[in-house]
Image 1 (cartoon, rainbow, N blue to C red):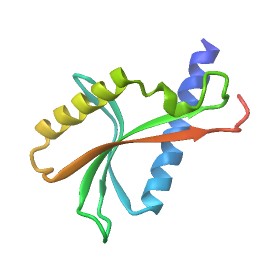
Image 2 (cartoon, one colour):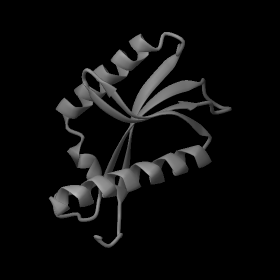
Image 3 (cartoon, rainbow, N blue to C red):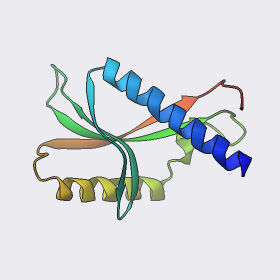
Length: 116
């Protein structure tokens, strides 16, 4: 059971770090750990860059402490990508006020944090 708790705390730590980073880059976080019939979306944000049109961004955060299983982003398989797109579309259907462009991004974090 301890391993599962450590994985959850590592995941939450990664999500918080990703959210802080994105906010520094001008993203506005509008949802965290959003549940849809197709799975959970870690972060939902609005990105309003001056050189690009505004977009809703659905962010999958992958955090790993070890490279033993490969880099974090490798776990976003084609099946996971399809679920993320379905989850994003379900979110947009439930929030018709969010109009315009949208995309799915992955934030991959490699941690050197010690296990607690």
